[in-house]
Length: 422
Image 1 (cartoon, rainbow, N blue to C red):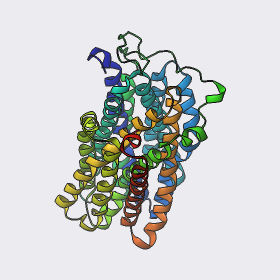
Image 2: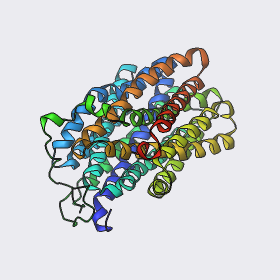
Image 3: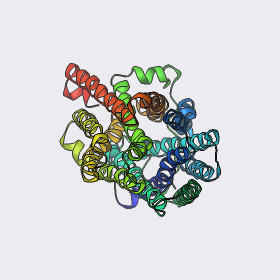
Image 4: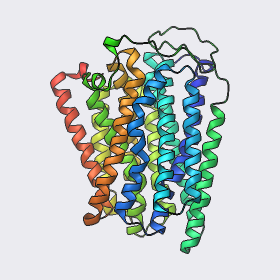
């Protein structure tokens, strides 16, 4: 990725991801606790959780095309941070299921916009050999926010040993305001002038230039090779990588939304739930910071396969022993390490499978797949919870991980190690 100076754009993105995701991951567990305090049933919690992704399902492709054309990608990233701040602030003041769903929708859209902007920046500015490193670091920043956010939220909710309903709602509002403040801080890093590498990722020896994280948009593509959703999904391997990405993101979302419910069922205090969620994120930070080393030593597809299988098995084992905090902590540390691998690896695998001019739209199609999963899986999980209990939502998603692993293993065995590594 070049010198430390040429990485300034990347470190600005990492800092942005950390603060914006800290704000977002303070807010998302608070949303579940607020709905619990308001007496919402599990199915309603699943429905509201899906609101986080419903608009991004329809907006992601348009955002990807915008990222392909736009010169100042920082504006997309900055706009995403602002939407996260607005959504978390809304969560602090609203008091109805419908308005909480609206807040979820707003910060969900903010997450989408900032993700497309930051991922497009890596695909545009990093060399091909630096893609794993670039995606690894921005997702490590995301995981760091997923670590700190639940800790802060759990600490605020743990300030009162036996709070009344009114006190609990006040504590949730305080935590949400802190989340909004973190999201506002993230915007500062998109206002700083930074030095970036050349915008031609396929050129390894490009000279560093002072371009203030702005450069020419991706080259216009001929109509015959236009990056349509069908063409992207029809590219060998892309649909498989998107399925793996969707499954892995789903397990993170279900953990964030339903681990508080499992904790309530087992009498685990919110502060411990926050610590468990933070442990998962800490392990993901470790694996993502090592990703360029791991992918240089082992085949990417094998790494994704191992991560899908081991993360599903470890997470599925958490609900039965939830009240045994040390055991749950170990399981989430191991699971979190493997959960952290699949997302950045599938980003690289997808954009290396498509033409260079398709990169931003391809990443947007991947995010669309992720959001479809974020809409459908919480809804199905909320329905499963009724007869099975909150653990059923986690087990359902673990089954999806194993299904994705089976599909990828079948494809890998047919195509061979070399081709399947794309």
